[in-house]
Amino acid sequence: SGKWAQALSILREFEEKCGTPISKLKQVADAMTVEMHAGLASEGGSKLKMIISYVDNLPTGDEKGLFYALDLGGTNFRVLRVHLGGKEHRVVKQEFEEVSIPPHLMTGSSDALFDFIASALAKFVATESDGLHFSPDRQRELGFTFSFPVRQTSISSGTLIKWTKGFSIDDTVGQDVVGELTKAMERVGLDMRVTALVNDTIGTLAGGRYHNPDVVAAVILGTGTNAAYVERAHAIPKWHGLLPKSGDMVINMEWGNFRSSHLPLTEYDEALDAESLNPGEQIFEKIISGMYLGEIVRRVLCKMAEEAAFFGDTVPAKLKIPFILRTPHMSAMHHDTSPDLKIVATKLKDILEISNSSLRMRKVIVELCDIVASRGARLSAAGIVGILKKTGRDAVKDGEKQKSVVSLDGGLYEHYTKFRTCMEDTLVEMLGDVSNNIVIEHSNDGSGIGAALLAASHSQYT
Ligand code: ADP
Ligand code: MG
Image 1 (spheres, helix red, strand yellow):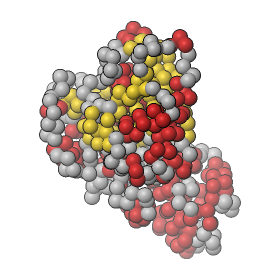
Image 2 (spheres, helix red, strand yellow):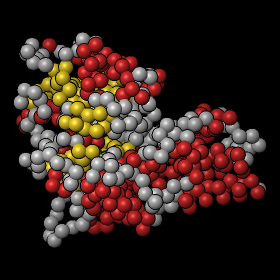
Image 3 (cartoon, helix red, strand yellow):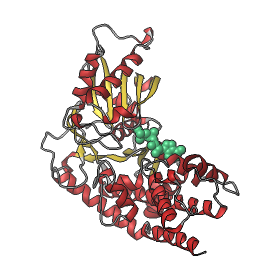
Image 4 (tube, helix red, strand yellow):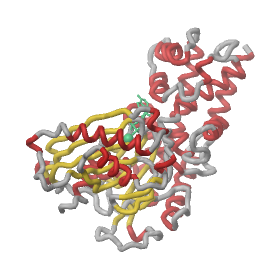
């Protein structure tokens, strides 16, 4: 019928606008490299903040002792305890606990959020077994992974630039987040010192390097997205401090805020952005990361329902609710291999209360998931190529077989198989022969371990 054709034409138009041929991906990678240069040249020189992390030494394996880490960056936070045994014994023991953040705390007051975190940490510390105990005059030390844009002022302090990923607490912005946590720890009677403040990309880079000395960059694909890499300190014009002995400085790119005229943006992305908590910001993140992919699918389905009666004469009420279709649901539908697509049918029924879906409708929905996921995955690959270009690792130098390992982590990368495969295939497509020297490695919770390792190397006692 005419309606069906109209629905398909909405899909085709969307597909066309989302197109990411290699020529376009190369432009995106080049734009990423250009913005990296600009962000390193001067503060505010680019949409890419290219934040100096103050991490100028990555773990070596010599780290020893008992250290804590706290990972806050999305809907959950994790507390970790790691017993490091040095070169010979490596990670002797590792324990963690995951706590979900009550949604009202994500938009409440700074004190309420940090009190909640400090109490959970205090409870976890109380489970420390006697065998691991510290000498009484030695303070416990913590690596704090805080995955929001922070203007770092030292390895263990930094002020919050803005919240992202659905957090919005005005009184934290501009504050030192280590100060906020330290005050909360004092309020709950926990004697602990934050010796390293990092974000998940830096933590993942540190954790990755601990296991593999060829790790040069880390990328997070989770609720949000970001990347960090090792830069040569003398290639950072905006750095006016002393050149570190190592000659290196880890840069937190905050690439979620990348934006370029080469990005394939659609009317749906523009509407999503305009109605978001942070309009005009985090545009790269809004077309790539787990917080948004399902929502983009929902928006396209909504248009197909409204303008082409895709689900019948009325628009399903649930379909109009922003963020109702989460990326894990989308992923489940996308991976449905049953001949009658019964997982798609079940998701439509359970989430959107659509019970009359036909097989051809379900096929269209799987295709829509594929368009949205492929665009995100291919653009992530282009971002990685941008980093490799900036560091001169996108070409084979004469005879040199330099391996470059990129540590990847985050729920989207970990669980969305088609996304991950597409991203990895695209890297090979973009890099050709050079891809033999590039390794993508899943750093399973490297970020927590990494923060503990950095807490160890920046201990007040060493
Ligand atoms: P965060 O980024 O909040 O620190 P994670 O790295 O665990 O946390 O990523 C969680 C995100 O990963 C979720 O918001 C979701 O978008 C995505 N995700 C989790 N599970 C799946 C899944 N099965 N399929 C696709 N995406 C998933
Ligand atoms: Mg995380």
